[in-house]
Image (tube, rainbow, N blue to C red; front, side, top):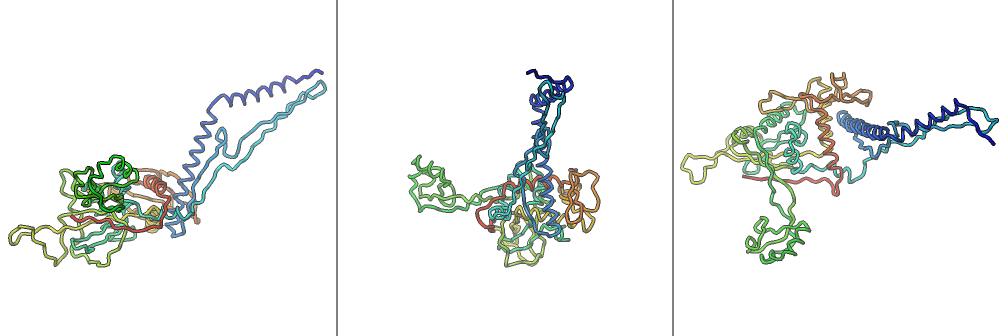
Length: 427
């Protein structure tokens, strides 16, 4: 039997085969597929994050989800994988026709995970650790963005551990918020340094110092996360531990001390108000310890004479300035509060970008009234369209979202319920 195919049908078939072959010989479809998937992830994540900020602005319950998988088809198709089928007749009596049947194989292209487990909420409601704040500052993140988002309040204590002033970082606080931004500007004169708090959890009774000469035992202790401690300090040799030592675990907390920048004495401007009310029942809160010297004393409180000084000599009163840190969930709520205040008043909430305050900027903005001149993205919620401006020197909205994305990713799991802790240092 002889098979034949018309020229037109054969040409069409060969063209289809050539097209499919060309598609298989280039990486362009795969590259476009990967890029499309990444863009889907970007837009979905940005909108999900901003959606919870909008919920916080409206004081609605937050609901967290994440895109766990994006499957983009070749050529960047988002609905499925396209195909092409061909039917044609064979044989002498068959019609010289070619019938092409396009197809589209549809699948679920995006997987969304609902984040409502106990360990997730434990993670995002636990206050951030001091070491994380210091890390972001050391990595070059602008303190003008990091400090407002991390710090919930600044508390001042005198030498008697009496609370002299608590300044909350809340955009609804009126004069108190203005006071906070003024203190924030003063921090640009300070150099922030970290040191271990020296607090240990002991696991052994006192051991003779000679035990430190046992290299194998010392290595095993290090592997277990234990360090030799004598007199409240880590020791590294048998000579340093001559009076005995104990194996303990460092709690890993840091205290942050504020000192003057080289060549500047203006860090001393960070001080509590004279005559501020004392609060004997101070809050127990997750804190970063900071130390201050040369601060004004409250009204009516006498100066303590300096050691060895003659009559009339006096030494400046010393106090603590304590930074209270937020949890990741509280960061989301904080940005929502800023957006709500700005939408209600029509006025921007500005933060200092320098000690001189000559370049104040908007930390976060999400207007509903009108789109900004340059817009990063928008979304609809509760009958309003929310707009997120693109980055500008005087508007850091997307910069704040970038930091929040990392924080939520770093601390989205916790094994214990949120707890507060005091970390304080007195000089």
